[in-house]
Length: 331
Ligand SMILES: NC(=O)c1ccc[n+]([C@@H]2O[C@H](COP(=O)([O-])OP(=O)(O)OC[C@H]3O[C@@H](n4cnc5c(N)ncnc54)[C@H](OP(=O)(O)O)[C@@H]3O)[C@@H](O)[C@H]2O)c1
Image (cartoon, rainbow, N blue to C red):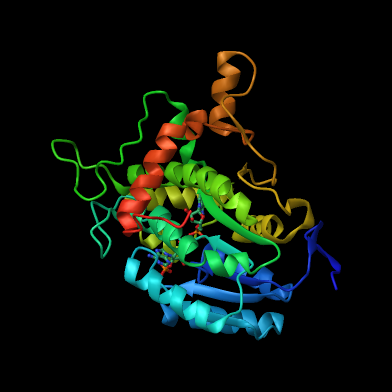
């Protein structure tokens, strides 16, 4: 029987769900795991280090009294690891209701790095891994009456309001030559615009299957000392300053819970939501060029319509297929 509970001033549907959250051992993923557990859902913390995740799992179980919280190991940048995770999950659970692709490589300032499969690490972790895992769990998602996928986006995509910014996916296997080595920050923003495009394509393809796919544009959540420690000094300093203004991770985690469980989002698909859980619109807001510019940088109502370019969306889809070896993707 469905009951309604109040959560942070909003109504959520408390029908028990089976929920996977990648990267649930820290930051927003950790806060979300706590909130889903508190609401009585079954939570699978999909983490690359069971050692780092276990104290968090224990804390969640002790705090919420919900024992249905488990850890399953996965390295989202590795095809073999994602495949092993999917096999184990499907052997252990009868269906999947909620899949939250929260994990991300965001070691800003890091230099060129590739995944175990030789793919640029930010794209491999933040885009190709989610693409592969979603495909491998598609049958299990279709066993749910109300399957929802959520991608953790970023307001870093605002760079794509600049018409000079391009999406170059030809350099996923080799470091671009003849250019100043770009820090991973640039590749991170490429991965997040690609993830938004993937959201739109995936939503269209999965709609007939009854699976919704949305993105949440995260515009800042306080970063943990561990996350800051992964960044080089200049980015760490910027991160510490940003943390003064950022909200705690629980705030964004609440949007994860709402978008993937609340009745008002049932059947809603193909959106980029802002932190108020409102669908953002493509393009710039109305007004003078100055007002538009300011809104592009500071606003939360619009995303660059760059992401709506269907040719580029196809390029992202193809890059995902090539990076994962899923040449004939199921959908
Ligand atoms: N915080 C912000 O201001 C902000 C802004 C915009 C977008 N976002 C997005 O929000 C999401 C959560 O960020 P956060 O701030 O909560 O960061 P976080 O605390 O650093 O969490 C990231 C998580 O991803 C995991 N991870 C990284 N690489 C992985 C891999 N290959 N396989 C499996 N897990 C992996 C990390 O695990 P380890 O502990 O093992 O490293 C960690 O648990 C990310 O998608 C991020 O891009 C955050």
